Length: 311
Image 1 (spheres, rainbow, N blue to C red):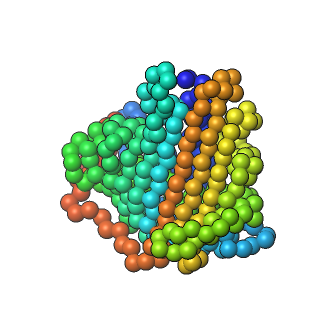
Image 2 (image 1 turned 180 degrees about the horizontal axis):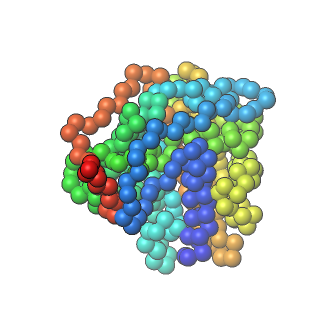
Image 3 (image 1 turned 45 degrees about the horizontal axis):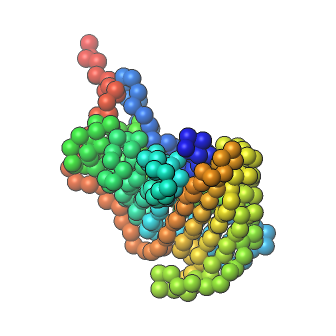
């Protein structure tokens, strides 16, 4: 079971790191020994989002670029896994693994501002029960989270304002823009995904563009060392799907990525994970407001410098 965890851990966390780091995102900070709180500085401008490269053009590229250009939208994201790599209890002999929610996120986005909820195994790194939901807001350069999040010093069930040096905790771990932009930066060609028919989604007829195992493996290769996946990891993929749903309004409304694989040394040890992103309400009137009466958050281990009396 340990080896299986290693294989899928490489794939999942490598993908997540590539998507987040590739777009300038920052990982959740870990409390550190006492250090002075630095003076707040103006937020760094996010890099300009370039269109996904594809000389052939077509409705899929148009939809990708339309999503990247959208300033407001709502998003639902789910990442589920099977196979024990998630840290779930190892099943008894003869029993099957159960799906485990690694990340479940729902949120509203207005430019650089966001209001979202998060739950799943990922939140356990903050000392939160994976079944519990954490709520966060980032607006006008300020960040807020709703407790309790004991690891960060938010011990009560109320809103806290996060200090500037830890503001990244209130940023979504993965957004449609970061997901799609990462593939654009890697040179993934939408022309590799074929139109396989239509389905109804969000009350609209939507074209479904699908890439097979070969397209997915090529995507990993184009990411290069960002994912940490080796050729042995890629050879262990048994099945893979990558689908995009482009609807009548011209926007991309859903993305699904599925991996199924085995451990090369022990082929009977199998696992899978699925990423599903749903997007809606593009360019609607979405406003992100800060919570009222938020309490300043003092993160354990951080110290606030004391003012020096003037002679």
